Length: 512
Image (cartoon, rainbow, N blue to C red; front, side, top):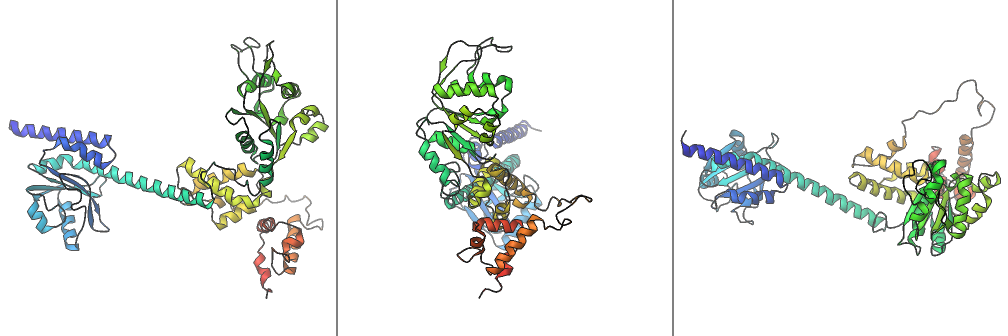
């Protein structure tokens, strides 16, 4: 083998290596093709074209030496398309000249190309996704060296476009959902502020500008921290820190140290001085969640801070003063705890200057569609999935559920439904466990309501509602509706009937 031929082989190997490095460095095809420019002769023409088998077209996605507006997308007759596929399937690289290719299969190469030409199929995974065209002397060798790197670069470009299209579609759907909810962002407001939480937000607006201690009361998962943050954001302390302490999670022996800090050497393991939560919240708001779990000794020290803002670190002798607004929350009945001695009465009076009760989700049925949409958007962002809205059947299931875990449980159900749906839908029924758990059976030998001659509560309730529906001819709302006679909210009545498995439409047969 002569020296000239050996030099050419090494040159083509070097070209292939450089092309592979470009494919790894640039995920977009235009940047990849521009990186090839200094590696080729100035007179060389190169084009990478995407093959669309369904439409029988070739689309130019990258080019060197080809006008951007020429031959951008070409359609083929069935005969020409069959000829092209035959060439691509017969050999890895087809070699000819521009004039002959234009006569046999017009549209493959730009008309302005002249001279030797090579046509190579781009198959990154045993499927032809495009073609590589090179017009220059030694075109066959160049096409052989560049064919596989160009195939990978084209596959990267198509994948990039697919992901970008998915992101655009997801963002468009997200914006459409926000428009339907009349919101600018997922976290720009409290869901239900104008409906189920109307009274709560009115109370927040009344007390936010004052430094009065606030006690938020409500069942677990009702959103006590959300309301506390709204208080802070509307207060004059909004620029200061907002710190949350879960009092129920603090070890009893470390509560004083956590809340008020400690000095070096005050106890075993205190290798340095440490600021407590009150010092760190100076100038802002300290949210004491589950404050009813504090032991009596900690309640005494908390009372002093609330009275004059002063305290001492554990092991310290110097009094410290802080300017902190305390917002406390609990799901316990602190009045009963005060009566039984489990909570200090003076601390109760100090914390409950302005109590704000939060309604459970079962009393906010009207808010469930908006909350479900909100959590759907949040789950989509967290999971990187297209946002999906619950349909009418999903909402019926959600509105008919009792929600012992309140809003927190709803958020978990929606996120689980999004994961199960994998971006295609919300699997609300599966997420709630509908049809997955068998009905519980009463053990034999134990007395039941039926054996005692009494109807079970659900059966009695179903019979009473059916009697009222029959009297109202299936009407639910309005002055002559069943909800009015039963003194119930119509939404609550519908939820109750769904839970009892009642079909109220059968009572409408007598309506004229």
